[in-house]
Length: 449
Image (cartoon, rainbow, N blue to C red; front, side, top):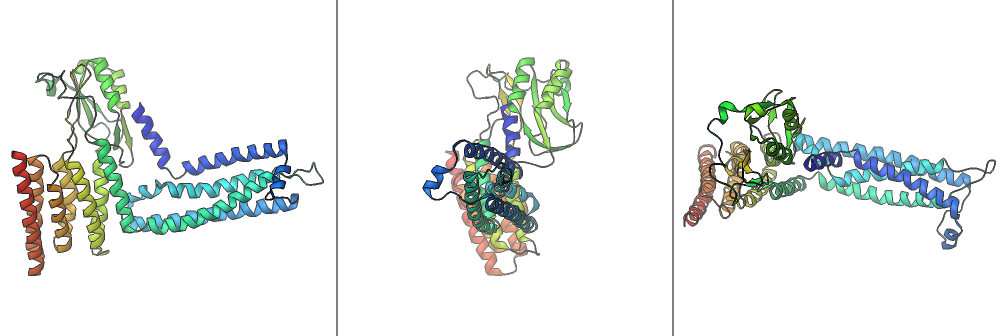
C-alpha cells in the first residue's frame, strides 16, 4: 500500500497543475488571514515603519487591479513559453522527454507564483469598501500584494533564464542521466521478500515444484496498457496469507493486453475470486511507461536522444556522444551491483514469489544496440562506444558481463570495417577496439582468480 501511495503522490507531484493549484489555495488562505489581521490590528504599526501602503480605496483598487491583470497576462506568457520549450524538446529530443519538462519543479513553481499572486490580489480587491459604504482599506493586505508583485518580477527573470538553459541538449541529457543513476541506486539490488541466500532458505524450498506448470492457475490483466508498477509487499502478503507460490509473467514496462497472464498461482485450487481481486490490485497500469520501477525506460530515453541526433535530418553526433557518455557512466554503476535473484522468500524462508527481472546483458543490449546500428558509418560515435566499454570493463563483477561487452565491441568494429570509408578512421576504431578487448581480457582474468 505504501508503494501505491508513493506512486500516486509521484503522479500528482509530476503533473503540471498540482503545484500551481496548491499555491493558489495557499494564496486564498493568505488573503483571508491578512485581511482578518488588517481588521483586527489596523495598520498603524506598519505606517510607523514607513513602507505600508497609505493611499485610499481608489488607489488600492487600482493598484490591486493592475497587479492582478498583469499577473494573469504574464501567466499566459509563461504558459506559451513553456509550450514552445516542450515543442522544441519533442521535435529535437523525442516526445517521451516531455514528461521530464512537466516534472520540472521550477516551471511549476513559476506558473504557480503568478497564479497565486493573481488569486491573492483578486480576493483582497473584493474586501475594499469606499467612503459611500462602510469604508475599509486593507493597507497591510495591499502592501503584501505589492510585495508579491515584486517577487513575481524576480521569478519571471529567473524563468526566462531557466527555460533558455533547460532546452539545451547537454542539460537534458545530464538530467536524464542523473535520473538514471538515481533509478539504479533505488532498484538494484531489488528488495522483494527475502533473498534466497538467507539462512532460513533450503534448496528444495527455493525452487519451483515439478508440477508448477501444469497445476498453476493464471491471473490475467483487467485492461490494456503499460504495466507501471507492481506492489511487491501486497503480492508477498497475499502469497503468505493464502500459502501460495506466485510466478510473475511480466515486469514493469511491459505492454499487456486484456486477459494476458500477469502471474501464475500455485496451487490453482486456492485461487478464489477474492485472491484474484487482491492480486489484481497489486498491478498498476497506465498509458505510458514510467521510471518508478522500469529502469530500462530511462535507458531508452537516452538511446532515443542519441538515435534522433544521429538521424540525417538532425545530424548532431555531439549529442549522441554525450548520451553514450551518460550510458557508459550508468553501466559502470550498474556493473558493480548485484542483480536481484528472481527467487523471493518470505520471513520463514519459504519460496513465495518468482519475479524475473532485468539482466546486465539485456540492459547493455538496450543501451548499445540502436546507437551502434545508427552509428556504423560514424567513427566518432563508434570510438566513443568502445571507450565506454573500456570504462565499464574496469567495473564488471562477472565474466558473463565481460563477455556481453566483448560481443558489442566485436560488432562495433565489424560495422566500422564495413561502413567507414576512410582507412585512417577505420584504424582509429581498430585501436580503440584493441584497447577494449585488452581491458575486458584483463578483467576476465582477474575475475577467474
